[in-house]
Image (tube, rainbow, N blue to C red; front, top):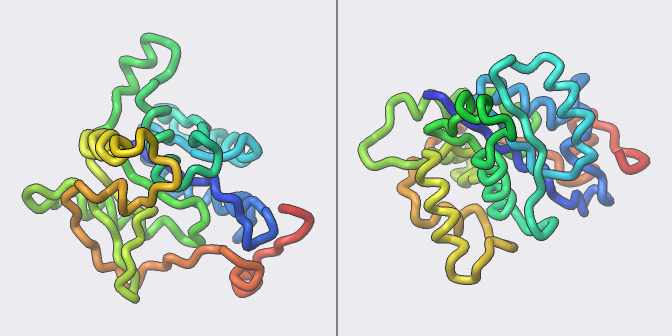
Length: 222
C-alpha cells in the first residue's frame, strides 16, 4: 500500500537543556535522518519542526527517491503538542505542491505513517507497521505498536489517511483546536489494532543519561 509519512520533530527538548533531539547524531547520522530513511518509500513526507532541521532534511533529499515530495512545516501554536503536529503535517501534505502538474502526480496516499523523530532504530518499527497494513482485519483503521512493557507507542503508528483527516476534525471540534492534545485523544474515535512488538527498539533520547548510554554527545546546544 502506498503511504505518506509525518515525522514529529518539534519538541522542546527541555530535559536535554533545550537541545534539538532530532539533530542529535547516532551512528554517523542525525536521529531525524534515521527517521527519514525509515520512511524512504513514502510518496510524500512532512517533517513537523523548526526550520533548523532544514540542513538535515536537505542531506536526506540528496539521495531521496525522485518521486518523493518532502516538506517542512510547523504546528500552531509552536510546541502545541503531538496531535497538533500530526494535524499540521497532514495539512501540509494535503496542500500539495504549487505546480498543478505536480499536484496531479502527488495525490494523497491511502495510508499515513506517523513517526517520532527521536527513535534510535525506527526502521524495524516502520517495517512492522507496513506489514500489518497488508493484512488488515475488518474495520481496522489504524495500527499502533505495543512495546515489551505493553505500552502503546502512539507516535509510531499507521492510520488510513481518510480516517486520520476525520479524526483530526473530530478531536479538534470540542475546543476548536488540538493545542496540547495527546495522540490518544486524536486516535480516540479510530478503530485500532494493537501490534505486539516486544522485540522492537523504542528507545529514544529524553535526558543526558539516555544520550550517554547510547554514545551520543550532547554539548553546546547541539
